[in-house]
Length: 268
Image (cartoon, rainbow, N blue to C red; front, side, top):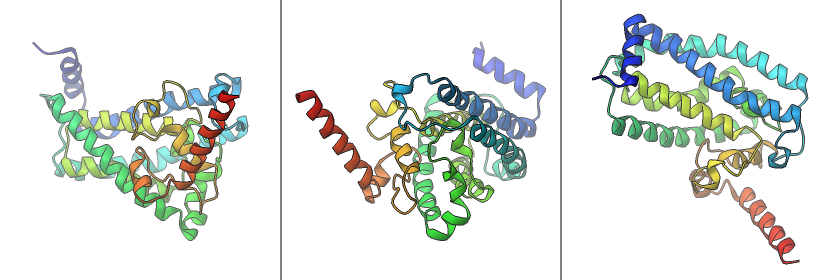
């Protein structure tokens, strides 16, 4: 007997073509997860809700937030969607499929973990390159227009950067030719991770409080509020690449000072 998940998947593959699911389906999933997970940080800023968990005390104006949303819609329709349409044959060639049966969860989770590790490694070096003087001035500075990030700024970037760093996201799936379900799960988790990292809020339930190697909002927010030559914290998801290459030195010093000040207050 088919599981509910398999029944839902059977409905999709029966009513839509492989091309429709892999391109338009992936685009719809990306847009839905991105905006649904990113909009709450805008509402928090405008209402002042959870202000004690806000990392920076500065707030973005409604006009700045709306400008971000408008440009994001334009970038997604004019850059992201065409890339998905054009890259479909390459993914098919590498072995991506949408037919039943769905792969075992052991395969799905191991592939997604591999994608996170590979993406983080490639993103780290690509991001460091974008912080060289010329590329920062002409490309990456667009992303840093928001020194106080909120969830939706995670994908606010120059079109060239969208393509450049987007390579890190699609490299893992391109190499392994996963089932479309695995690709969708990867897209969902990767979008939620980058939105959380740019949310501007560090909650008690944040994953970085429980997973030592996970960066999260506090780790990435530090990157946004410093000058491009001194920012560090270049990795997308984990902290070990910055630790290995010493690009988190400023952040670690700041955390040590904050801890020392906190301990002093508790003593007195």
